[in-house]
Image (cartoon, rainbow, N blue to C red; front, top):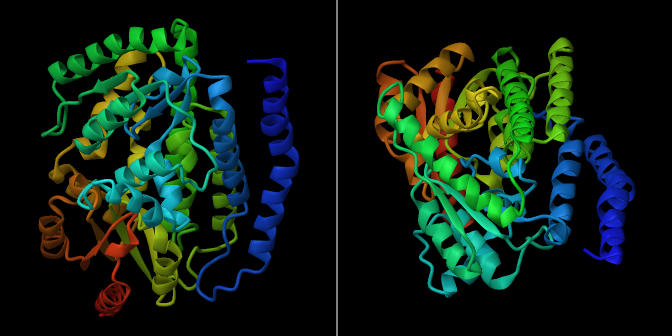
Length: 440
C-alpha cells in the first residue's frame, strides 16, 4: 500500500468516519427519536445510532479493505474467529443481502441474477448476492473482492453451491467445513473429531492466502471477545422475560448485525455492554417496547426484512409484542460453547450446535422452553420460502404447539428478502384473525 493510499485510508476510515460521519449518524438518530410518532411503539433505543455507526464504518473499511487486508467472504455459521485471528477482513454476503432487503432494493438487485438464469426458487439471499456480483449494485457503496471463501454447511446446503459459484467467479480458494447433522441431544465424538480435523486442515490454506501464521495467542483473544459478545447478547434477549418486555424482537433483528458480522471485535463487546445498560434502564423505568403490552409472542425463523415496521405497528396497535425469537436466540445460545482454552475444539462445537444443524424436535423443545421462560401467549412461525431448512417441520410444530402446549400458533407465509412473496392483504387478514384468537 502506497503512502498516499495509506493516508487516504486513514482519512476516510479513522478520521472522517469518527468525526463528520459519526456526528451525522448521531444527529439523524436524535432527530428520528424526537420526531417518533408511533402511538403504540416505544421510540428506538438510544444506542441504535451506535449500531448504525458500527455497521457504516464496517462497510466503509470494506471499501478500502483490499488495500490493507486479505478479504474473506464467509457464511453466517462459519468459524470466522479463525480468519479474524489471521487479520482477514470479513464479509458476510447474507448480512449484505439483509441490508439490501431492509433498504428495499433487494428485488431490483436479484432480478439481475434471475435475468442471467438463476431460478427464483434459489434462496433470495443468494440471488441478491449473485445480482450484486453481476451488476455491482449495492447500498453500501462497494463490496471488497474476496481472496478466500469459507462456507460451513451447518445452516443449509444452499451455501455449498452458492460458494462454488463464487469460487468459480473469483477463481479463489474455497474452504468448506462440512458439519454432521445432530439428530439427538448431543453430537457424537466422531462428529466432533470430523469437524475438528477439517478446521486443522483449513489453517494452512488460510495461512497461505493471508501470508502469515496463525498465532495461538491471537486466536484466544478473538475467541475471548466472541464469547463476551455472545454472552452479552444472550443477557440482552433474556431481559425480555421481564413484563413488559423492554425491547421487541424487531429491535433485536435491527441490533443483531454486530453479533453476526463483527463477532470477535472489542467494539462489538462495548456496543452490547452499552445496549444491555440501556435495556436495564428501560426495565427500571417501566418502559415496554409496546405501549400497554397485553399479549406476548414468539417468532420462529428469519425476519421479513422489508416489512419489520409494518409488522411491529400492526401487532402493537393491538397490544401484542413479539418478545422472543428462535433466530435471535440462536446467536446467544452458542456462548456456552466458546472456551478460549479449548481453541479449535471450541470452534468445532460452535459449528456443530447451530440450531439449523439440529433436529426439528430440538427446535420444538427450544420453543417450548421459551414459551415458559418468556411467559408467551402464542407463536408466529414464518414459513420462509427461501429458507427451507428453517421452515421444514413447521406445520407439525404448529400442530403440536396448539395441541400439546395449548398455545395459538400462526403459520405466516412470506420470504425474508423477496417482497414479491409478501401478500400484504392476506398477511393482514391472517394477523387480524390471529390477534382475535389471542384475545379469546
